[in-house]
Image 1 (tube, rainbow, N blue to C red):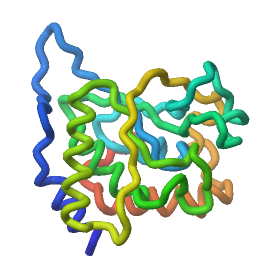
Image 2: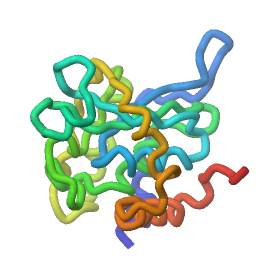
Image 3: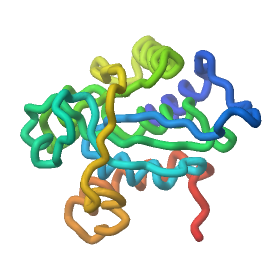
Length: 206
C-alpha cells in the first residue's frame, strides 16, 4: 500500500522549473547522477526505463582524482557509488527519474543499503544545477510531510563536481551476470519491484 501511495504522491508533485519542450538549439538529452547503494542495482533498474539512453556506473562526491573501485570500497575516499543517467526529455523527465529512485531503494538507512554498508553506499542526489537541486528538495519535503517512510529520509543533496566512470567490468553488471548470487538475491528483487510498479514505462524488449 505504501508503494502505491508513494507513486500517487510523486505523480502529484509538480517539478520546479521543469520543461520538456525542446528547440533546435537545445539538446533533448539531460543527465542526472544518483546514488542509491550498490551501483549495479541502480544501473540495472534505469537501463530498463523507457526514455533512458544510458545508465553508467561510476563514482562522485570524493576529492582524489581517478578513484578505483578498490579505493572507493574502503569507505574512506568520500566517493559514493553512483549511476549517471542520460535520458530523453521527450520520453521521460526528472519527475519520473526521481519517482523510480525513491521507490527502488531505501532512502532512510544512513550509509547503507541492505548488507552493503559504508559511506560509498549512501543515498544521494548529485545535482548539476539549481533546477535539479530544487526539484530534489521539493520531493524530499513532500515525502517527509506525507510520512511515507517509518524513519526520516537521509538522502543528501550534493553538487556534482566530477563524475568518474567505473571500470568496464562494472558496466551492465546485472545483464552480464544474472546467475551470480548477488544478482539473484539483491538485484533481482529490486528489478521485480520496479517492473511491477512501472510496467507501463518499461523499454520494449527487442
